[in-house]
Every structure is written in C-alpha cells, then in structure tokens.
Image 1: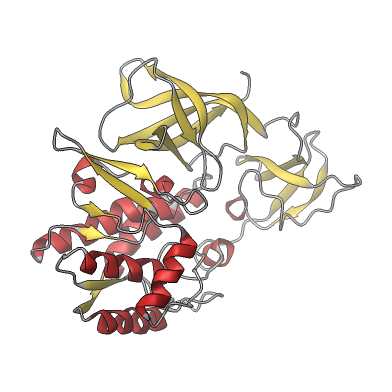
Image 2: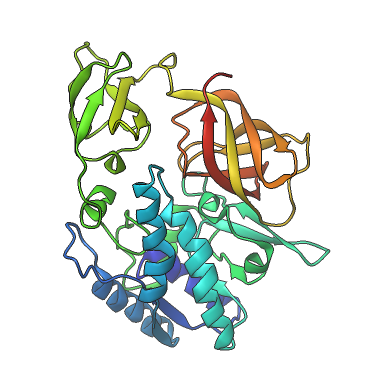
Length: 357
C-alpha cells in the first residue's frame, strides 16, 4: 500500500473476495540529501495506515532502504554515468516489489503480493500464469511488469486490472476511503515527486560540453550528457533558429562529450529507426519462437506495434528486433515490452540501434 488510491482499492477488492489481507508500505527512500522536489514518504505512510484502519486490516512498514540503494539507485546512477538511460520503474518491480519484498512476504508466511497495477492475471490449465493488459487502455501498466519471470507471476495479484480509472475512483468514494480524492503521483519509483535531473545532480557531478547540430556546428553548452535523453525536446537550452521547428536530442558522443541535436522530423538522422538489438531478455511464461509476429512497446505511453525478430546465433539473451514502422528515439538502456495481442510475453533492454536499415 503506497498511500495512493489504486493500491487502497486493490486491498478493498481482495477483502471483498475473501482473502486474508495485510497492508504494507515499502519504505525505500527518505530524501536524506534534501533533493529538490517532494518525497512525501511520511504522509504516504499516514495515508496508507488510515486506509488500513478504515478497512480493518493490519498494517506494517517494511524498511528496504539498503536493498533499494543497492538494487535500484546503484543501477540508476551507473546507467546514466555509462551513457544509457535506465528504467528504474521496471527494475523496481522486478528487484523490489516482486524481488526483495516478495521474499520478505514469503518468509512471513504470505502466499502472494498484490499491487495496484492496472494489469490482469490469467491462470492456465498447465499451472502457469500469464499477465494480461488491464481493461483501461489509458492506464495499462503491463509495460512496467515486462521483466517479471514466471515464479514471480505465480505469487502476484493485480486486483484492479478489470477497472477503468473513473470506476476505481467511484469505488474509493463508495468505500469512504480516506484518500479517495488523493492525486496520482508521478516521479521516480518510490522516491516521490522528484525530477530525474534534480536527483542526478545530487549524485553525479556536472560535466559540461558542447551542444552541436548534425553538421558539427556548436550551438551551446550542456551541463552533462547524463542529464539528457534521446528524443528530449524540453530543457535543452538551445533555441531553434527555424520557425516552428524545435530541436530535439538525437545523439551523444561520449568521447567528445558532445550532445547532438536536430529538428524533430522523420527524416532527421539518428531520430527514427526500425532495427535494434534487445538484450537481457526476460519472459513471463514462454520464450519467443523464431518467426512469430509480436507487438513491441518501446516505451510507456507509446502503443505496442507490430515487429519481428531474429535470434542472434547462440545468444539466448538477445535478439535483433525489427519494427514494421520506424520508431522515434529508441533509447539504449530503456525497456522494450513484448506482447501477443493483450498477453504480456516479456521484455528486454535496448542495447544498440541500427540506423542503416
């Protein structure tokens, strides 16, 4: 229970289904470094406890700060420092919620961990389980579950996947939940309303360099390559010299410490691509079968689109992925989720992009 309305309604749904439920707050971060932004962990605990009291269930705070630093913060900082763009939200689900926290739950005698994700579980005749997209296409969060494995899914419950967000809000009102009107949070997983750039500035030293266009002309200065991601439009700090054309980040040259920008157009080099390599593969239930058509989702809030793939010889941990239509700003370090219609197959991490195909 994060203190938000989604996990609160999820707890109420489980109680109505007859489950024995205990609420738990994962305490991962307390903003010791006074990073700019709101990290309302104390208020979140108050809200989660109030909901638990209202529902008549026990509530506990589980301190996982050390594990979070080792598994998420370290991964995050090392990724940005190496020039890629990590995805802490996906990793938080694999390593924390359904990793460390699930292990804790099992050790305490619990059978499953339930969350407020907009996703659904399907039990199969062979004893396996699949993750399906939630009914609310605007809130579907299966992308963030793309790196879970079967053992984790066997101990996962997603009680609100059948609801639309307005329906969930109505249920919260009808249940009289204390946090029924609380706004949804947007920020780094379990850290709060903290901008990634502010978080990074607290841990990674600035390393200024040149901002250049595709012809190599210097346009300005950046504060550090780790503060920018491919496809970024806002906050670059270089005004466009062309009417109604905005600069976007299209590349980074680590050796020269140069940030490359171009106009946001389909024919701009390095901005759109169809072919890439995806590694660190993980599958929910079954591996991909050579030759099958899949849907691939290159980032959250971007639709899953048709794609094909080729296995890379003896490498079982990576594939060459080919989108039917070029995709904008495929970003190394980010997660790509694989689907068979509405069934989440798994996912992997973008390793490289081939702009020649």
